[in-house]
Image (cartoon, rainbow, N blue to C red; front, side, top):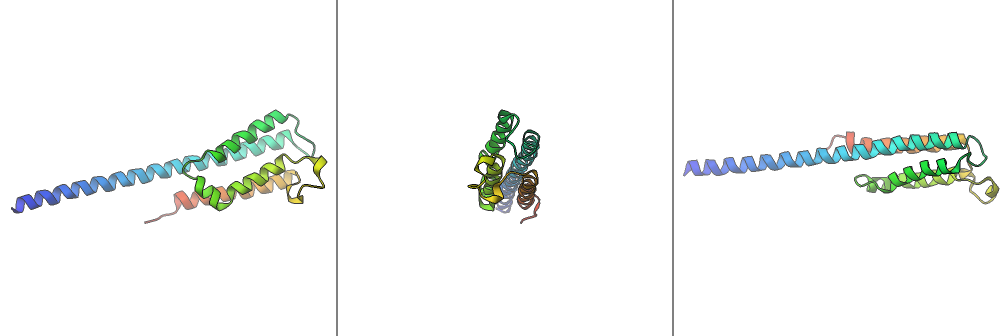
Amino acid sequence: MVSVVSLIVGLVGVFLGQMLSRANEHYRWRLDQKKAEYRELVDLLYDAITGVERERPGLELPKDPQLLDNAIQKLARVFADRIFIAKRLRESGANEQWEEMKKMIYYDPDLHDVVSKNLHYSRTGLETKEKELRARLIELANEDIVAFRW
């Protein structure tokens, strides 16, 4: 009788151990996915803004609008197709920050009087918006990935 109880307790222990191990593996896998999504987003933000500054060094319209469009569309797609961090981006306001930045990038000087002043294109303004968005993304990544939780 005692050996049967010991066997059952042992089997339950092994089963629970495997369940906990699988749960831990899945948790770590999700963290890895989030990390990859944040990393890609931060990298493409840098690439896109560097491209914008190269194609639009001043208030004039871009030298090559197609290169500018390609960089912005690539980053827009990455913002739109996040799976593991989409909710955090939405709730944190990062998506709205990106949309504002996009409006500044596509600012048309001919519409100066009808566009909000904070959306007028300037390298300084664009760099400020990029730094704020990058800081927000890194803050979110730290909260999602680095922070220790029980």
